[in-house]
Image (cartoon, rainbow, N blue to C red; front, side, top):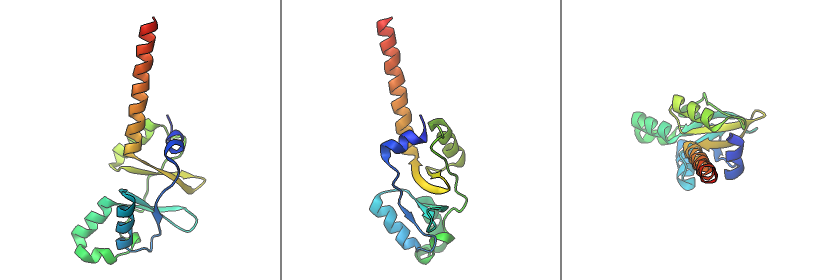
Length: 143
């Protein structure tokens, strides 16, 4: 199973914002869309960072309420791990586990093409295991 199959099922929509937006706007977007991370892009949809709830909480812990007036570029993670449509579910799980993060942007031709969450990966993996178990049961029943 590949990232392409996950994106075909869930779609390519990603909530993004620019690096010059305020953190207060990022928090509003996270809450409005009930998501845990925002991909930071420039005007050409090139990925320049990622901003997670964890990034925001850490900054609030350091700066308090004044963190709300900071711009995204000051809080985001600029070195973003990415994947592409050809990555397998197992490869993506390994990247996320090793990096200890839950969101992985998908890039195509140098631009943002989607995002995969750990929930997407786990759901797909469970579906695969259930399908394999059913195939084994069917094979045993007909043997």
